[in-house]
Every structure is written in structure tokens, then in C-alpha cells.
Length: 444
Image (tube, rainbow, N blue to C red; front, side, top):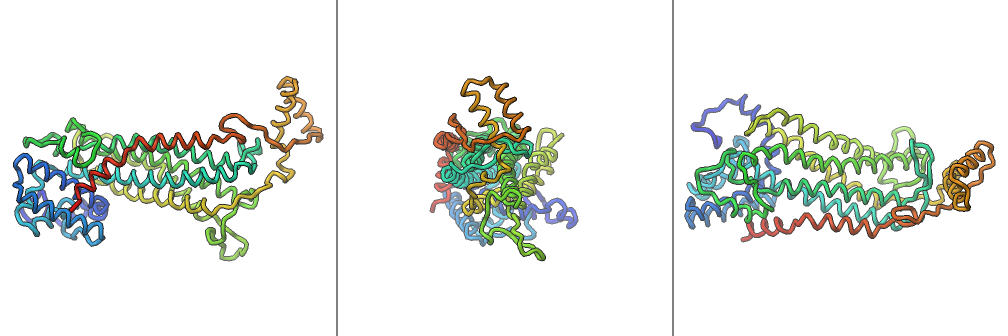
């Protein structure tokens, strides 16, 4: 029996097609669904749709179901359509008709909307926490290897001196911008759609401000039609922030694959973090980074996939939106796995020193020689011409020192400034508001 059915008849073929992977995906939303119901039923009691005694029964059993979810013993039964139906069914079995009242003033439309917002903001919190760990690892590596020079490239051609401090620090600062995008996604996500019902409000005098406060949302989605329009938009904006993080990880993975190869030989990893060949005993393949690179390519395609699934939908709810869970939820898990693995790998990276002793890197310092002439009074174009002719004539002799002191250069990484930028971004999230609200809702 489904929430929307008037009798028990059903068609198995239609059921299989329309339900699809919803039971599987709704497990992700299980705890969020109970949190939404805990807040909603407390509000229903204040407007007379639940008695104090009914509320006490409902709250007690909802909290019991929530603990079962935390312990991993909760399941959505095979003949139950979704998480909303399962929770209501369990309540009705345990406390009788009071369980049937929890849907008053709600549609599954706004119920799944609030579940998504609650679930996604928690996942944003988890992602941000992991990004912080990776950021600190990169900053520590930048500080530790600030004086170790390495080649810088343009067009994959030897260009100018760089350093491992610059290389690690570049990815750390990149994460600051990525979290700036994630903070924007969090602001859009952390709005309460509950009370929009099927998208056109309710004739019940719902106290939407109360549920907003109870659930720890920043504010509510005021216009009930726009609250429904947020389905798809919220997922797409979050996917865009995820794709930004994926792009950073993708470049980090690509560099690691290059630098680990014998032709570069800039870094190495313990044997247990690489893989071998079935016929070539010398191989140490960067499989972790290669898989991460490919996974991140898929993540970067996620915003477009979501956009194509929601393009040309008129105002209102459509079943098309159900499929968004199937692409977004596994993608979130993939991103978290990549963040965790990148941090783990970097904690075991070995940086090779004295890379630039190889004569093939002599030309890396040509700009340094040009600049030294300029500082002695030679016009830049003349200095450039002289060094260029020396290179052509084979008389070029490099000075293997890099004298870079300006902000953000080899000799002035500004790691403290980047730390401050990250701290400022993290402060904007204000996760404590919803974390405290959820703890208070489930207490007891």
C-alpha cells in the first residue's frame, strides 16, 4: 500500500519501473526524514492537529526509529514505496492511528525537499571537514619543502624554476576557492521548504518559521512555488561546487601520475601505495591517482548531467526529479572517497631533492640570467637577446639560484595569508546552528 493509494491494487510492472532504485537511494535520506518529521509534528501540536499525548507517542517512536537508523538496523521493506511510507508505516504499527496523522499539512513533494536539504547540508559539512584535512596536509608539505626547487613547465616544456612549496601551496589555495563555491551551495541548500506541500501551500495554519528554527535552517524558502522550483536547482548548484573540488583533485592526480614516472622522477611513494605489473617486475603504477583522475572527470560532468535531466521542466513537481538522487548521492560518496584518498597518499609522498642538478634543466634558469643583466642596467630586450644568442651559440652558463621574493613566489609563499583565507571561508558556514538543532531534536 502506498501513501497515495485509495485501495490495495497495483501493477507490478509499473511499480518496478516507477519505484526503480528509490528504496536504495532513500536509505541515504532516512535520518533526514525522521528529523523533518520530529520538527513537523512538534509544529502540528501547536496548531491543534496533534494532542500533547499523541505528540509524546510520535516523538518517542520517531526517536526510536532514528536510533535504529544510526545503529544500521533500519530497512525499507520490499513492498513499501519509499522512506516516507516506511516511517509512517512503522509509527502506525507501533502507536496506532496517531502515526497516520504525521502527514497532515505535508505532501511527499515538500517532505522529500526537506529531506534532501537536511541530507545535503550534512554531506556538505562532511565534505568541508575532509577538505580541511587535505588543506592542512598540503600546507604542511608546502612549508616542509619550501626550499626544494623543481622545474616549472608551460606547454609541457621546461620553463622557469618552481618549488615543491609552490606546488603543494597552489593546491591548498585552490581549495579555498573551491570552498567558497561550496559555501554558496550551502547557503542555497540551508533553506526550509517544509510547508510548501505539493507546491501551492496548505489551508492548515502551518507555522513554517517554527520548523525553520527547529531544524536549524538559516531561513525558509518563502514562496511555496519557488520552494518546489528549488528541486533540481539545489542539486545542480551543489554539483557545480563538487565539480570545482573535483577539478582541483583531478589536476593534483594528473601531476602525481606525471611526477611519479621515470621520465620525471620528482616524487615516489612506498611500494604498498602503488601497483605492479603481471609481467614487468620493475613497475610501480600510480593506480590510485589514475582512478582518482577518472572519477573526478565524471564528477566534473555531474552539473551538466543534472542540468540535462531538469531542462525544460515546467513549474511544479515531476517524477523526472526522482532520478537526480541516483546520480547525485553516489557522486557525493565518490568525492568523499577521493578527498580521503588524496590526503592519505600525500601523507606518504617522498619528494626528491636535487632534481635540478641534471644538465637538462640548465635552461630553466635563463630568465634568472636575463633578470640579473637587467638589474645591472642592461635594457630587458637587449638582455633577452644576449641570453638567447648565448643559448644558440652554446656559451650559456646558468646561475642555478632563484631570487624570488615577491608575495606568492618561491621565496615568499604567504602560507599564513592562505591559512587566513581558509579560516575566513570556513567561518561563513556556521555549521554549529544545524548541528545543535539536530542534536536537540533527537535528544531523549
